[in-house]
Image 1: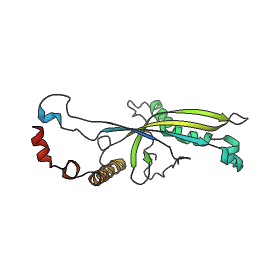
Image 2: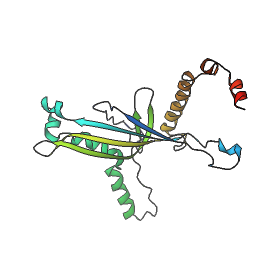
Image 3: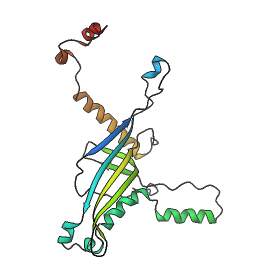
Image 4: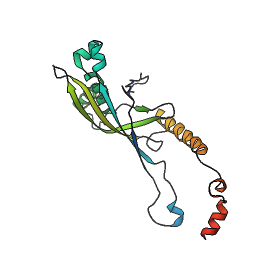
Length: 207
């Protein structure tokens, strides 16, 4: 979504095939690596999460159905849609050049699109594309790419990254609350059924 548009209409980029794997890295945000005991367990916020996926694009089926867009350009349009996630709009560049010519002293960097990763109903996350690589594997006679693999790395944007008025702030908070609820169903409240002893008994034996 274009953050400069007061009433933006989303651009949806569906994965042609579901990725077979997702790699998630969580970097703990601790208050200090050392210091007093009271500081060791303090957290400054949610972990910084990085998500990496590899997706595939293939125009074979569309070409067999003689789809006009595929015949004319292969998967150029799908690749362009992905690449525009890391481009400013051309209009923002034109506007900034106009401000420069008018003598404006300070010009803010242009904003990229507000991007959401929707991975099923339980993962709707505001993200920033960190990097991606495109490997074009096959071409038609006019050198239009017709098959490609794209590796994408995204950083999840949390409420530490966004103002409370931003739509992404609420989305991440909802994700956090949902994760707490899921964690409650995926854990146990007593060690008795696991180890045959209470937590107090285990700690006593360890001491």
